[in-house]
Length: 313
Image (cartoon, rainbow, N blue to C red; front, side):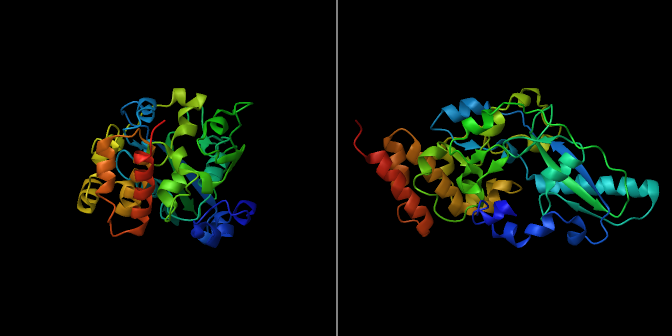
């Protein structure tokens, strides 16, 4: 509640609307007596993330979004788990959640013994943090597992690497500065002072996970659904910026990226193109979007064009 009061949620108004409910499972789902917390590994076998980030002409997409949208996959697996339990004990009340309701999934997973909260605020285990979390709210009075012990120690790699210094203190994130928030959740113009810090990150950001020592031990995803689609792990900025809205909708069907819409996609790509080394082909691509119907797109295209065409020292 203090985090919300400080405005750290930015324009994610739904977080404020449902604030107290997150900490009261029985208020969200009446009759809840226990929460079964689960994890699903998603780290895809993909082109090297560090090499992608180091190439300013390529687009960086967060590892979790390279493949299929996880929401449906995780809910389906939770439903199968619920049915297996029912086959053993008989009917019971339950409801599955996969990042789809006001659920404090990291804190619930910590209390369930799945791991500990890292200083970047994500759940961490000895096998890293490349996984999704899901929950079954049930009316079963299950014996609770012991909470996980912390193993971050004095490490502050995630705080130091964050491009925008969004991790303002250990275990405290200001979403208004977070690249994942700015490129995904934020509906309006990206603050001009933060645009250069986005680099070539066009959807999300993984820096705080890429630098985490525990992620050296992370297992690859077992599900082929999380393998890269549409070449998103190697795509160039110009390739993606050339997509029409129809291309965007068709090629990203079944992807989490689709929900931000084509306008935000172009906004993010324009910023990345503005951060790229000046190239005639980049300036030409940007100029072709100067009359885009969206004021949001036009604003970011003009910003990028100015950076592409300014005199070089």
